[in-house]
Image 1 (cartoon, rainbow, N blue to C red):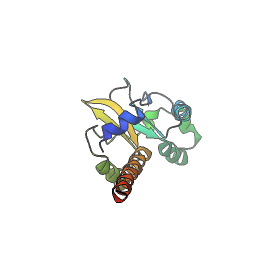
Image 2: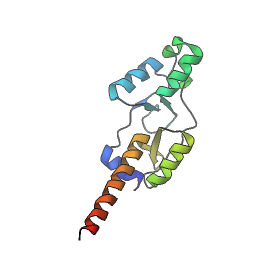
Image 3: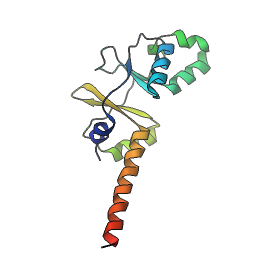
Image 4: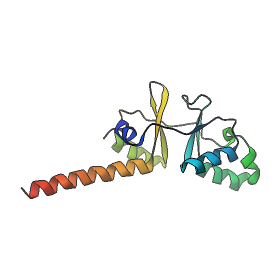
Length: 142
């Protein structure tokens, strides 16, 4: 299965925040959309970073509650790994597992095209297994 297939099912909407947004405002976006990470982008198309719940927790532990008023740029990850819609989900699952990424932005033609979570990847694997199982059961009952 390809990454683009996941995006066709789940949609390509990505919640973004500008790097100047406060961490508190970013948390409001996470809560409002029931998501675990946002792409940090000034224009909604280019990726300047990614910030997650984990980033907030780590920085809260290091610097205290004052971090909530700091800009997202102070806590975001700037070395963002991305994937293209034509890439294989299995390869992405390995990367996400080995590197402990939970969210991976999808980029097409240099522009943000979606985001895939580890949950999306696991769901696609389960769907593939269910399809395979149904085919095998059908084959055995012929």
